[in-house]
Length: 113
Image 1 (cartoon, rainbow, N blue to C red):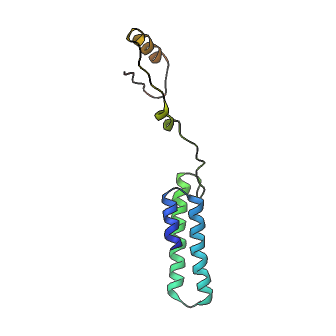
Image 2 (cartoon, rainbow, N blue to C red):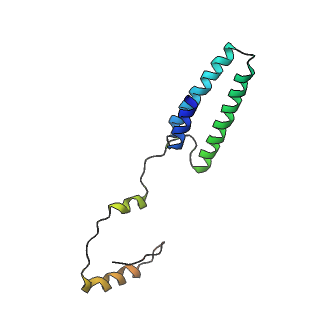
């Protein structure tokens, strides 16, 4: 159950919280393993969880910082939805278009209405 919750949190991007859930799941199995040291199913479950968590952490490291949450910093492109638009006077449209196209940009700029 804790492992499943960890997977849900991992998928939602809550990496440090998912690690806490994975650790709790493993702690539960390790405690049970100390109570039943010869139970092969518990030993297999521990190995399985360790391997799966390792694979998830390796994937998270490849994508960024491992099991750490993102900073919550908004990407610049996300702010584009908040840009205020207004109608342009047809008399100044050509001057504005020329001014926009006169500047060198890293991305192609399409001027439209």
